[in-house]
Structure formats: structure tokens, C-alpha cells
Amino acid sequence: MKICIVGAGPAGSYAALLLAKQGHKVDVFEEHPEIGLPIQCTGIVTKALFELIEKDDYILQTMNAIKINAPNHTVEMPLHEYIICRHKFDQHLAKKAQSAGATYHVEHRFVRTEDNKAVFRHKGEETSQVYDILIGADGPSSEVAKTAGLLTKQPVWVGVQATIEGKWDPHMFETWFGSAAAPGFFAWSVPESPTVSRVGVAGTHKPRMFFDKISKNMGKVKDMQGGPIPIYQKRAVHKDNVYLVGDAAGLVKATTGGGIITGMLSAKALATALLKQEPYEKHLKGLRKELRIHSLLRWLLNRFSDKDYDRLVRLMQNTKVKKILYEHPREFPSKFLTKLLLAEPRFILFTKVLFQRKFAAQSMPSSA
Ligand SMILES: Cc1cc2nc3c(=O)[nH]c(=O)nc-3n(C[C@H](O)[C@H](O)[C@H](O)COP(=O)(O)OP(=O)(O)OC[C@H]3O[C@@H](n4cnc5c(N)ncnc54)[C@H](O)[C@@H]3O)c2cc1C
Image (cartoon, rainbow, N blue to C red; front, side, top):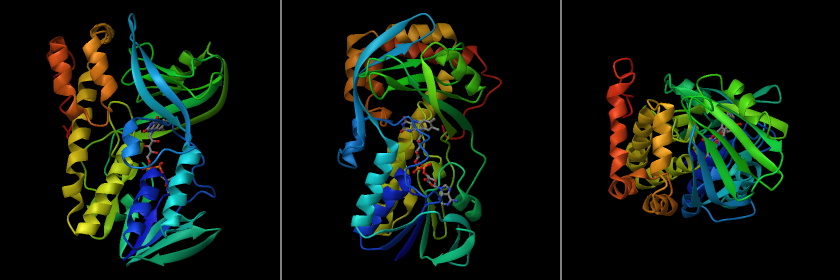
């Protein structure tokens, strides 16, 4: 089959790699001149990544601890995660896909479809590509989704991030929760070296203002980046011979805004569905289940007061809780939520916030 993929981010290139390996004729179109640039991502990933792709020199740093700051309490927990260079990582995936037979076309911006042709703008001219299958891997504002009528109004956070020169413990990342730091989400500092950290804030409410506040005394701000983060909610990701993967399909964890691994998992689901000639939704089911749990947790967190965050952080001091969170990558909460509740039954008390705050004002998310 002739497969045309729009977008050479992790979801697009991983789909290209898997589909080229299946023997399809795969063409990937990327609007930017260089794959992986510009970077709009912190690049923190769990070990779940290496179930999909091998480790390589795209790993910048290994984290072995996290410090979680609530307004008045702090917890430090062991963890084993990785900071990747998105430029190198996206290049790595693209090279692998090319070795498997995929062809890449940079500086090609997808604009529309005409029958079974995808039309691109390339250096001021229009060019087209015939396809049997079109895959939209073109990020949160997907033109492919728009063209296919698959772009629904989805809530988004805006992430604002910069690299900051200062002094950092290079193996520990830090997060801040609560109304003063980042209402409705969190702020983070993720060191890529002892002297440079990726500091950011995301949310729906003035993230730039909160970024300025948190970064004020941290050091010299360099390289501002930012971008939209779609918040998962169930929506159609397939119509006729058009499929969406990654951020284009809105498949991002609502707890953390992480979408690299979930995007690649959606690419894997699509490649398997095409191989077996089965519905894409059938193979997305497992991922959707995990993303629904993330949405429910986010829905709960959005009702937390500062005192609730303090209480949560105090309960996380429990050694058994720390061990469970250390062992399980957060992509798959269905595998550890029950264990957490058994280890610390008082977590269940947080469900009472559902009845205390905003309950009448906000309905359940459609994804939940
Ligand atoms: C500030 C910030 C920090 C983040 N930090 C993390 C993190 O630490 N960990 C994590 O897991 N996730 C993080 N994310 C989310 C993560 O970046 C995305 O979920 C991930 O990049 C999605 O991959 P993708 O391949 O679906 O889309 P993208 O990486 O967005 O790739 C889409 C590609 O399509 C191209 N494109 C777009 N439109 C067109 C077009 N019309 N024609 C041709 N090409 C096009 C783009 O240039 C791009 O290369 C963060 C996001 C932000 C904004």
C-alpha cells in the first residue's frame, strides 16, 4: 500500500518505521527543514519508551529522584526516568524509518487532499502525492484532522518552557503544585546538566505569568519555547482512509501532558491494525483505557485545594507508595492504582473533593 504520513515527530516516524518494516511504500512529509526542530518539549520519558525503541545517544540525562512541592509540604521520591534530546530523538526515529525503506520529504507543508492525493506546499509551489492511506501525525493543530473533518474542539493547555542556566542537581527533577505555582496543572524543573535545566509551566490560566514568577530567581533564562498540549478526550481518529496518531489524535496524558510514549503507542496500534486488517479502535482500546484513568485523575486534581495537595504529598511519604511509583511507569495507571490504594487507603478520602468543590459547576469530562 502507498502510505502517506504527515509530520515527522515521534508518532509519525514511529508509524513510518513500523509500516515500512511491513513492506509498505511509506512517504513522510514534514513542514520544517530539519527533523526535530524547533523543540517544544521537555523530553522527560519513563522506561516504557524502551519497550518501543532501543536506547541511544538521544538520552541526555538519567533521573533518579523527584521532589514534589505542594504549597507547604515536600516529598522526595526515588525514580528512574530519562531526559531526552528531542532533536536527536526525532532524528534517530527518522533514520531508523529511512533504513527500513521510508522516504522523507522536508519543507513540505500539508495543505489539503484532492481525491486520494495529498497536496503539499513546497518552496512556494504545490506538489501532490497519491496515497491509499493518509496518516495525520501533524501535532495538536492537525491540518489532516481538519481536512478529514476529524478535528473536534478539544481542551488544550499551553506549555511555556525555557532552559535556565543555574546550579542544579542533575539527577533530580522537581515539580510544584498549587494555586501559587500553577493552578490547574504544575510547574517543573528538569535538569539536562548540572548547569542547565528545562523549567516550565503549563495550564489554561496565564502560564507565562506563572512561568515568570517561578523562574524569577533561578538563573539566566535562555531559549524560550512553548506550545499547545491537547488534553485527552475521546474523539474519532479514523475516517475512510485517513487515520490520526499522537497529538493529532489528542492522545496525551491529562495528568502530566506527556505525549511522546502515548503517541508512539498509537502509531504501534495503527500499524498492528493495518497489518491485521482490523479496526484501529480495536487496537487503541488499551491505550484509551489508560488515558481515561489519567483524565479521571486530572478531573479530581482540578478540584484540589492547596490543603489537598499538602495532604497528598504527606501521604506520598509512605515507603510502600514510593516503591510502587518507582516500579511502575505512569503511562499505565491501571497497573498500579489499586496497589496504591491498598498501600495507602487514605488516598480514597480525596474522592470527597468531588462533593465539596465545583461539583455543580463542572460536569464529568466526556472521556471519563
Ligand atoms: C512545553 C511542552 C513540554 C512537553 N514536555 C513533554 C515531556 O516532557 N514528555 C512527554 O512525553 N511529552 C511532552 N510534551 C508533549 C509532547 O511534546 C507531544 O505529546 C509529542 O511531541 C507528540 O508527538 P507527535 O509526533 O504526535 O507530534 P509532534 O511532536 O508535534 O510532531 C508533529 C510534526 O508534524 C509537523 N507538522 C505540523 N503540521 C504540519 C503540516 N501541515 N505539514 C507537514 N508537517 C506538519 C511538525 O512540524 C512536527 O514535526 C510537551 C509539550 C510541550 C508543549
